[in-house]
Amino acid sequence: MGGVMDKQIAVAVFWGVLAASVPAMAQSPSLTIAVDHPTAKVSSTLYGLMTEEINYSYDGGIYAELVRDRVIGHGFGALSHWNMVARGNSQVHISVDESTGPSAALTRSIKVSVTDATDAAPAGLQNDGYWGIAVRPYSVYSGSFWAKTDSDGVPVTVSLENDATGVVAATAKVTGLTSSWKEYTYTLRTGNVPVSKNNHLILTVSRPATVWFNLVALFPPTYHDRVHGNRIDIMEKLAAMHPQFLRLPGGNYLEGDHISERFDWKKTIGPWVDRPTHPSPWHYQSSDGMGLLEFLEWCEDLKIQPVLAVYAGYSLMHEHVEPGPELEPYVQGALDEIEYVTGGPDTKWGAQRAQDGHAAPFPLHYVEIGNEDEFDRSGSYDGRFAQFYRAIKQRYPDLQLIATTPVKSVTPDVLDEHFYMPAEQSFAEAHHYDDHSRNGPKIFVGEWATREGDPTPDLEAALGDAAWMTGLERNSDLIIMASYAPLFVNVNPGGMQWATDLIGYDALTSYGSPSYWAQVMFGANVGTEVVEADLANAPSRVYASVTRDDAHHKLFIKVVNATSDAQPLGIDLEGAGRVAGSAKLTTLSAKTPNATNSITDPRAVVPVEQQIAITGPRFTQKFAPYSINVLTVNY
Ligand code: AHR
Image: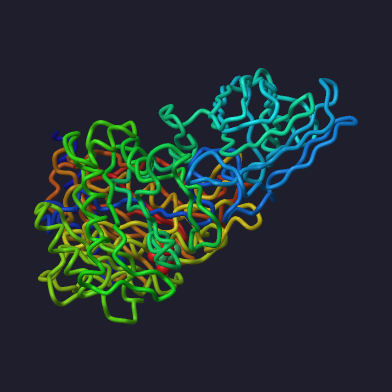
């Protein structure tokens, strides 16, 4: 104890001597932190996730389905991902059959007409997956399909075959097909095969027969072994961000281009065969495999809460529903949706959820009414919001209701604000909320990103993000939630509709952009209280915010140095008393702001941790050029 105190006194004297004898030091950049003076609570829900079906985020992304266009026909690319297979002298023709399908929702199918086939020369069809199908050794793949045939009992062989080598990694036989539509399941088990992403799924018969297929599906092992669940690598990346919520299901995806193309949640629940699928406004058809219940289970798997966005009567091509009686069915739809999420088994929609496989209700605290309704030129949002607000509050008074643009007729609990910015603007906006009124609704920054880099952000973007996040954190008494967008991109050609996305992937692997790592660093070191911190004499493009976790005596000092020079910062921990002799410094940096990660070089820019010696509550720390830093001090 005495030793530490002596050291502190010595350091204080040293600083005092320097200050007295070298007047220029008074101008040195400094960060004075009133450790014992918290100014606000950090919102416990500050950082979360925002997603929608964009950039092949679900189909071809986190939703682990390996078969592309598993639903045949309408809205999907005809048979562009399905091809005939004809071995030896076999003969086959494949086509979309508009006249038969497995259900009222799915009225089409692929007709596979095999006129000549044998065991040695089978025929059928194949699917090329989402830019390939990943195969790993010693893995179990669970598959299913709906089918009927004109040749009772014809066996179907299902195989995973490598595009380049033709090596079959796994195979299974499905028997019992009849002339009626029925669902069949199969399992593919790989042995000692190499890891590869260029595989395709083949379904063949070895005698003449016509077979109709739909909903051909195949899943690899999933996160938490969820049946029809999510990709493990991507879920692990999300978990590492320490998110607190998932805003779902969008974004523009909630709205659709047209009212008929909105996210109509009732058509996304229950068996796949009852889900008609729908067009995403991002120019491809959604399988709706990621339906309302799957979103909620995603939340459950990450132990986070849903922020449920309900369709509010506006679609992107400037179609709106007038407030009043016309809007009532949509309001009722939202009430039903909330009941599906939160209701007990004694409620109509809670019972439906139980029947769909999840008896327990999900927690729900926030409901967002619409998305970006400032684009509704009719000016109907005020009335639409008020109608939803009154109906929801009457039935669920504890729910916090989020407006997507300011309204006058009622006061929303929370306002969702979106920011897509070049780096220069992110830097300029780092103090955006410092002087914001605290008398209005709380703020949810439901979409934001520094847009530099394509398909995923570079270090310059991450620096802009981190500068912006210092402002979110400093003002987290006001900003109760914030989520980067978009979250995902399939990096294959044609996979991206919106540039600058946090996490990139192909069929086999995924990677975090520098911006992703900035999120990880901030999300893992949030703290519980904002601490007063004065950054003085620092060059522009140096930013800081400080929080503490008093229960664990930890101080989180975030410093963003977006300049090309190393920045020494005199750090003064006022009121800290005793501090530990070393601190953890986590740094994300690179030689240039253009440095980035990619599918082929996924870890070029990643955080590096080091322990640094601290001589007492006043010390100088040098921060690397182009760096994002979290200094964790135990006090
Ligand atoms: O994140 C991409 C899009 O940006 C969202 O769908 C929309 O809400 C916003 O305009």
